Length: 464
Image 1: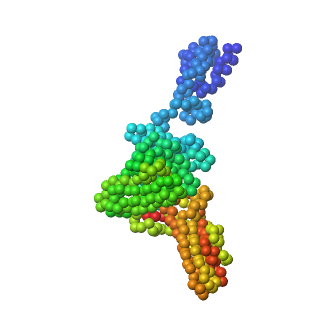
Image 2 (image 1 turned 90 degrees about the horizontal axis):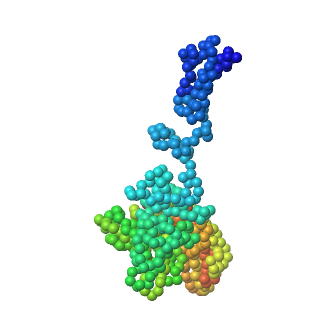
Image 3 (image 1 turned 120 degrees about the horizontal axis):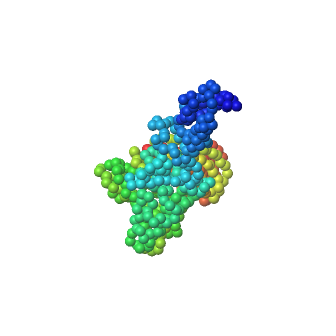
């Protein structure tokens, strides 16, 4: 019986005992039994107790070989991996790091970094970069979540907008307690709100200003711009609309010449003007206000404000994505805008572009006798399918003399969208009408305007 016990213990794999397990000393003076040696119970219990004690809480790094095939699911590493646990040149792919933008809320989370509020983690660094991108490129509305999210698109093809927060996207919805980021109130007595802009202007925020009717200070916002180049021309643009009353103004001060453009239209119109800096320019102050005449509260809304350096004139220097359409027409031109329709559509890939639209309609009368032509051509604009609005119109008025035959005229019409919304799709329609009801398309009789009576060109252009 004793001999069988000895043989049983002798065939136990010693590797199971672990590198730090020490066997009890036997009668032979070593950890092994000698042949024909009497096996004591204490010796057997000592060996097994050493194994059990090692497994029950005593296992450490020394118990494992060089490459233990342990599954990570068997290891509780929560809170244990620290900077010292990672090699100095660990080649960890960013694709292995998840959940920086796992949902729309995280995608819209930003961090305003400063020397007093440092981004102390990689996540805060990313949130600070989001904020910088949003301030440079603006934001858009996520159609599925109806939230403002950062625009991820190519940088400007021209020098980027020199205004901070010109689209008022870095502003909370509703009435802000302080002016939108980058701006200052001109009169704290006015009422201000940043809300969703009109569909025709695309997506995002607009700034609405209501005067306090004090008749002293125009209400609005201003921004101080420093670091402009000397003796250079700059272009200022803004989309503006008034309510039932009010005059919307865009003004600058501090230049050799200054901007003073106004609009009282109740639909959005683009105000464009230029100014020139002094040889040694100081601070240029740009102001967007509603005229406070003291005769009642006036309201103006502003969007897409921009300031751009101009190499020469507004004339674009590089053409990109021209859309050219031509058409023919016969028969009477109606006295309502329902004929001569041509549509040209462009999608804006990012900031730094303008859209230049040129149209032409040819019409006349091939009859003999006295007649009147009041031939009109217009261009309408539709942004992202939000509804069309007229942006340009031309009129030709002609009274014929008895006996004249084949009287016709070509009516040109043009429009420049100076600050289109990145990512938006713009559809332009050319239409014609005749208020005199005497006009027909030039192809009538084949002798007036030839075979092409309608032309429309929409160009998406990079601007210096």
